[in-house]
Image (cartoon, rainbow, N blue to C red; front, top):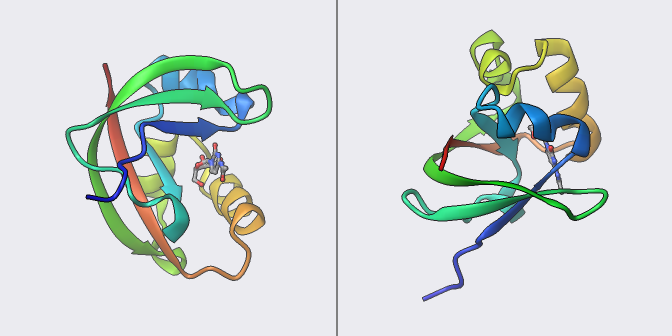
Length: 105
Ligand SMILES: CC(=O)Nc1ccn([C@@H]2O[C@H](CO)[C@@H](O)[C@H]2O)c(=O)n1
């Protein structure tokens, strides 16, 4: 079996929203879509590699960049234009993405 990832990093500025349960999804590219529903994952800050909390993966669903809407922005705890701006910077010219939803452990 392929190794199941047990760690995920978020931009430091967003980690308080993950740790408080306000941000319940993240949208990633193919390289980060191998999380498995039901597994527990450690959340770290991307810049400083500090552990923030543990989450449990609920689902991993494909989505196209062009399909990202207000509903996703709410779950991301971000304004839609800001969310699309961040995603286009992190994953330039990438149409195929994945919505990873999770719960705090
Ligand atoms: C290594 C790496 O790519 N790290 C990332 C990538 C994305 N994100 C956030 O996920 C959501 C959708 O992209 C938005 O809230 C982004 O700010 C993040 O925090 N850290």
